[in-house]
Length: 480
Length: 121
Image (cartoon, rainbow over all chains, first blue to last red; front, side, top):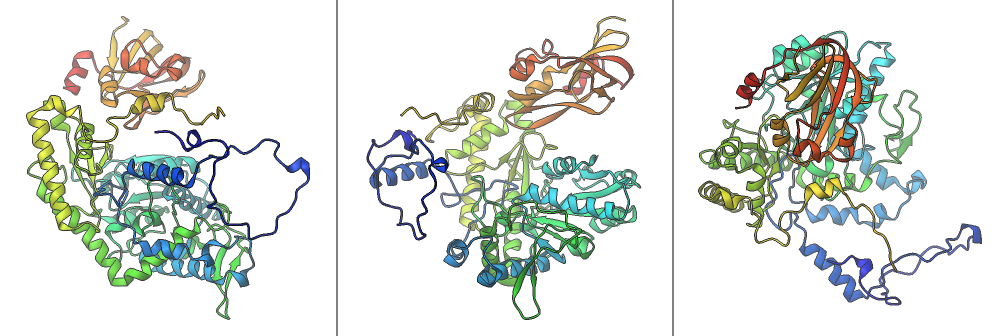
């Protein structure tokens, strides 16, 4: 389809923008741009059709089943957006005085209080803009803690191979050496290997729980204890918190710092590149190192921004992070309440187990006893015997109006498909998905040659991912 | 010393050019498992390598994978053609060597062609 700049005609336009509600200031000529802005010249009809056309070419949670493992593509209640659109949140400036932004500050203070309660932490910063940014920030806290104590020999972070791929990357970005510990055949952290890996050089340990195999770690207290005994700190990757909200708390499991993915677990539309929010919560021993400023409640009940944090690692993002995602998260928490959050997690786990058990006689499911909020299918045998890959099966699902699961992740399972149905899907949807997954299996095993041709009914077939990655076109060149 | 090609269990091939110099590349099995490569990250000449540690990474549309050095030594040559043409590894993995290492002082256990074939079968 054409870009919006290629539509319309010079001189055409529409009056959708409201008049300016602030005084117009005439700048000196030297500050003014000399050429005209390259704005689209389209009528309101053309504009409306353009975006409708774009919308028809996308697939989101509002279109159908979207079990993209590790991404928690749950339905995002519209009330979240209603709250985030309130003028008291959208028409304020980050540098406005505290007296005029008490509501916004209260949102951050309340969200901090509730999310600390949910995670078992003492304080939280909303500055990190996404999960990996949260990991980076959390590890900075650990680093600052050791440095403050003059404990400079701790230069290693231990990461199990069932962790999110961002964990070792974040540790390396902070300047740590990454020590990998293997999983047992059952998919849990190998506790003996962990015991051998710790020492005086252990700065910390990062655990993704439930891990990327969809399993709740079996020996958490023993694991966190081993790290603490060695003088290290425990980091909890809370990206999979959707499985345990209101049921188990990282703070009770021996973790000192945790990040959350508010856009996932606490429900902001995501997947289109943002904005996200990856707040970092920590126990008191790390609170002094949190990014500055922090929101504090004064004795008289009003809220303030505290910049007096001499041990802080500093800012990790402009102002206060992606504030409107925090508004949506708080709305979600208040709408569901304590029991509702717990219920959401229970249903997320139930839905994943239901689908897994329906499919385990058809597909090879390496860890099939029980799972948390997601489960893994391995198509290794299908690939070996019939030449049909995880990619082929995933592409076939598009023909049935479903988003495929995550492919080729986790890395320690060959030809993996990772399915996370989430709690917001009905039994009817899950049953239909199971029927489709079984039907596809039958199709690709009885006719493997056809498997490479999926999808057949979508707007586009298989995009040239390799060509796009090797020769990316990243900018538009105006030719008007 | 012949120019026999040896293999690692992390899917690199290694060719001894003389007693202390080797050429390292990715095996045909590695490239077929990875799929079409779109990016290669290589070390620089003069970098010190340690046996068993990573020295490069390769990226396909599926994933990014580390490449491990089976020897300790110093990078003496880098196949820079691969930076612009990672697809050469897919089309001819034995020809598309990644680096050469000199002053090899230590090496890991490596597999013969026969042993490697057994490993991947």
